[in-house]
Length: 241
Image (spheres, rainbow, N blue to C red):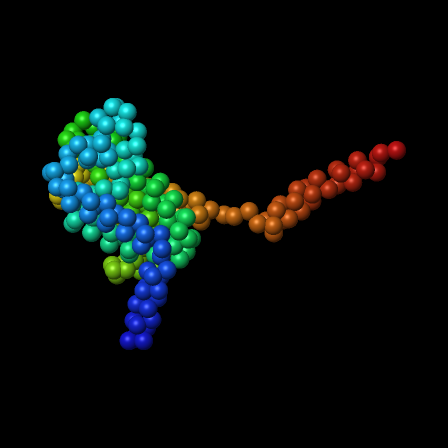
């Protein structure tokens, strides 16, 4: 048992060290947060959060960069640490499976979809902009649980399938019950953002696991078509002068 545990931790450590995209993104988020906190944090930079955070008002004013920029800033250190933990737990596994490009595509597509769902479901009740990369983390998590439904999702002792179902049910239900949560106020969470990002990750996992067209399948299909039209073709060939 001890040897298996040591091997598991060694593998996780090796994956983390090799996960350059994950480590680079986490480092970038920490540098951005350090700069924000050094200049007064959320309370001291309302204009900054108004410009870079995501809100209907900002989009209406022409701040079309907000769907991209909102994920790179966080409300406080606790907010950032939670998302950084998610990235460090999920990112290395995705990089090992599909590489850095796949991880970045998942994260960016996830936070874009999460932001869209947040704007659609929150209505006019949002008082402050949405910030944080949790929509991308949700997409990465649901993709991983989708392609590895039977594996255990560290640090939780449950299968990927059950974790994915639980996350989607909880975030979807909470988004419907309280759609206006998650405006950067400490413990507030945008459940609509998580649901949208998770839905995107689930769809990308289903796409990755779709039946592939192989040479054997093409040859089999060609043989079936030729067998179905064989007698007629042979007759036509014989009837030609």
